[in-house]
Length: 187
Ligand code: ADP
Image 1 (cartoon, rainbow, N blue to C red):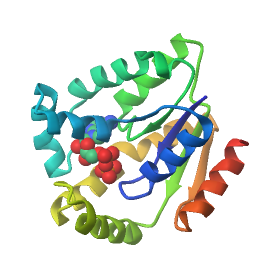
Image 2: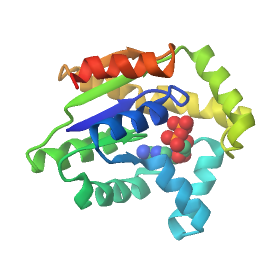
Image 3: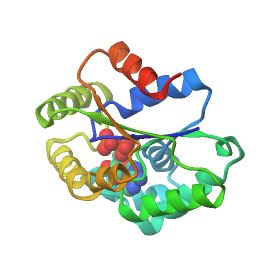
């Protein structure tokens, strides 16, 4: 089963994705984590990605499409996965759709974690104090929210056309939201 978590930065994709992946025994693929690990390691990918990430901009598709292809090709993602943080652009969505279709698979559930902009800003600012991520500065947060609206939010309409997008109000407790997701997925 392939599950896509959609939603703005701060919507809780990471938290719910982890719970969901653990519960269903699926791998979770998180492009943000992969990129942060590459930055830490100082690899060529990390060096290229870092300047975009620090500003809150998307790492270009020219870089990300190859990364997504590699992740989808891994043995552990053969039968299912939880996708967190991608696809984030039309080109990424096309790659994911096409790759799964070629394998006779599809995104089974698309969960849109829905949180108001005010709450997102509040959460991201709070997290900034705890995690110290280099893209949690006020300017980068603003850019990330704008980039989400411009480049990623249009994917909601793209997937809604197929009728398998579920909106999850994501302002309750972590447990409440997880219960909601369980109900939607049916397991
Ligand atoms: P958030 O959703 O809170 O911004 P992520 O960890 O998903 O956090 O992403 C952090 C940064 O990593 C993004 O701002 C972007 O620079 C980069 N990134 C992550 N995933 C992608 C992707 N699929 N395409 C392009 N850039 C990405």
